[in-house]
Length: 339
Picture 1 (cartoon, rainbow, N blue to C red):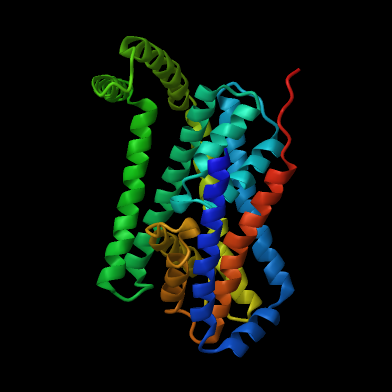
Picture 2 (picture 1 turned 45 degrees about the vertical axis):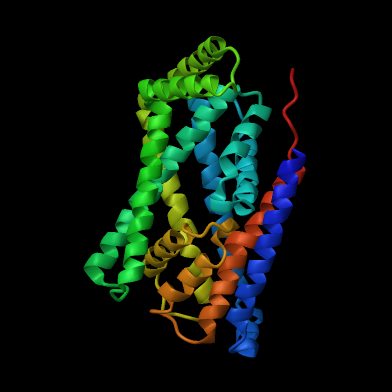
């Protein structure tokens, strides 16, 4: 646990360093106009943007709640939403948002859900979210293909397509981990045999039996997702709605800055591209890549210092404020007591 805290501190330090660099390059050319635009922003649209972002996380919590109940476990809707914000914190302070899923398992286990089921629920939630993300991504790709929202830039085009393919591969791998019983058993047994030959495992037979027992329980729970097709469809809808709401946040920000050159559809498509580019950056929160993607894609719709102002406000709401909300949710969390 101590090592985990040290890693979080290091990651936060990296975020602050990169943030300083981003702020420098964002503000250096037109500091006064950018700051004036931010401070003169219509507070009503700023609040609307924050509400939209929070509603997105609430829907993520609702999705998690639905899957917990579908797996025959109990959790309050409030706790499911609270855990959603806690996950947001750990996603924000770890590279590639890799800390969210392990912590989701941990906090579901704190709610008296077994580790095996908590792992299943987390993977199921991730699969459903990835499906939703890919569906929104397909919509964005088709919209740009038919209506040419962005000019044909070969490098950016390749990065976007690569990001889409990577998301698809992540979905396939996660699906195999959840439902590929024979594949998982083969990989685990081979891994145990290798570790035994290297003298890392003394009793490979006992380890293999325990692992096979765990895999049987794991896959029995995973099959439940296939049986609960109604819950899956509902959660895909909930997640798509949440993602679209998140992608509308820039529209509210631009409206608050008195910019009318971006409509809702352009906001959804542009943000989908921005998030795809940002997924390549190994720094926590995709810091640097996300900002560049925002300036690049929205730069085809908005010009001047107002674009940098919008990027800074949007990034504050969807990332830094998200980390703050997640930290508050973490501080307020109370472990479920045994009856």
